[in-house]
Structure formats: C-alpha cells, structure tokens
Amino acid sequence: MAVLSMKQFLEAGAHFGHQTKRWHPAMAPYIYGAKGGIHIIDLRQTLRKLKDAYDFVKKSSAQGQTVLFVGTKPQISRVVREEAERCNSPFVNYRWLG
Figure 1 (cartoon, one colour):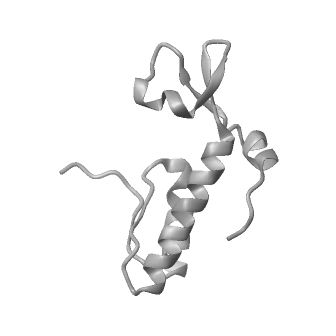
Figure 2 (cartoon, one colour):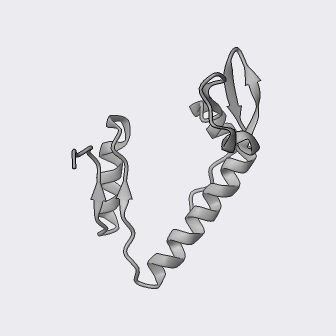
C-alpha cells in the first residue's frame, strides 16, 4: 500500500467534517474537535481504519473474492473506473435510480 501520511491528509483537507449542527452522535468517537462550526475528524483513527480496510481488501482479493469498487461522486468517478479496470474488478461510478 502506498503509505499515506498525516501531512497528506491535512493538505487534502480530509480532517474537515460536517457542520457541528449536522452530525450523528454515532460519529462522536471519530471527532477530534470543532473549529468555526465545523467538526474536525480524528485523522489518526482515519489512517488506522484505512489500513484495516486495505488489509481486508488485500486478503479478500488474495482468496479470489470479488471486490466491487463504488464511488459515484463526479470528483472520484474517473479514478474508480481506472483503478477497478486496472484490477479487473467490477465497479459502479455513477448514480442510478432503482
């Protein structure tokens, strides 16, 4: 796995959450704090959970299981398609009404 650093996450703005008035209490353990009415996400936990997800996908793939790539936001649609095709995996990169 390409090592992602805390610095890269900060530069990408990954620590910015939703407005403090629009949140779900189940997210409380993952919120570092708040600033200017915006929740700040605990990036240490984010990095840990991302590593867990990576390990799970790697293990599943090694066992021959299918990994479905999903990302329907316009900003990520192209990357989802490219990476899924690179891995010869199925993907959904657009929103459908069903």
